[in-house]
Image: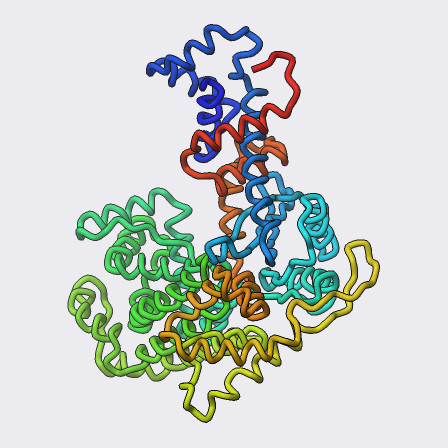
Length: 569
């Protein structure tokens, strides 16, 4: 019981990113003082050199919990029929290049899951070094590279280039693997490109960046804004940093500025009167232009629609078949923003009198209509065109849509007997072909097909099965194909395709979140933390439950006991 309590304390600290070597013994003393009799008795009976409350002991507990978490994940990954790999690199606080490695596979419940497996230091950030690190990791952990069916990376040429990139090198050893450019990155690029191509929006983004810098780097100015917000009874919001590379940052920035627009203008004017700071006057004049205010209201309508799509793409359970419907729904919503009586226009007109009382802005129906024609419509059209062009599905990806029960024609329809056969041929051409490949060591061989030529006949039977089913959800249909023993036996190739579809990632949001965890763990104060401890702490923080059960604790103790000890526990 005492060792379990010590492991629970270790787990508590690691889950909350609290430095473990400096807080472990103090946490133990606190727990004992609160009446933990079992732990108190253990510490009183134990030899002075075997209390297991030292820095060395807590480091070993972290290692045991991390190894246990890793082995649990690897066991499930090795049992998966197929998997995808996701990775990205980031520089930590000590300027070490770190490669975060995730895997995605379908669990026993038919749901796609994404899990963090390791963070690896890189000596260089070229494609060959990253590729070697990924392959070595899979070899060391006994992960069958032949099961690799997908890769998820960002748009950097090192990862996604057509030649000599990480994805192209991985395709040589697993030619059936499909590369997916992170759709969240694609969406952000589409938004930034549309804003930069529309001068009225680009100038507003520049103003927002200048505004953030003005208040962020001066606590005194920030307090001035806060004081005005209190007087006007407005929410005490800080201006959020807008960034072209940080997802959703422009949405949060615009929302904060719009909510405190009057307070910001008054604060800027007050600061200029007191200090004669030219920046305050310049930003105030920019915000007092009618075009800037109208653009803020437009963006406060448009960006949340795009943000909803981005958040949906970041979810772990989303699969490739959901992308097109989500994008189409977003594009249709953006059309509404171009209407003369759009919601954002009506909201602006409602706030017109209040804004004019506080600022020097004069809004007219004509000026808003002019803005709509000269700025809003070109911006939205450009945004829609960018999203559409960047979200064009590959033939293989779009072919997975044939499993959608809602798309199957009625059995008595003339289209029924040919429905889906052309798309099945697309899938067969890729997954049903034996492709030349190379081993990790460079030896050439022929990679066997993942599905057989019988897939065509299977599809004809499965098509009839779909036509007789209630028109349900596509994701649920894919899940049924991967979990039903009956369907897997009758339609083995179709079930394989469903498993592959769910295994391929949509975005690298999970990888990006791991870097946030890394920065919470490896801080400037904890910059000397070792690589193995960093890896274990990240696994504990990201891949272990909030509370460890008794069975899990027993398993962790088994791992901990594998290390030889002079004094038996």
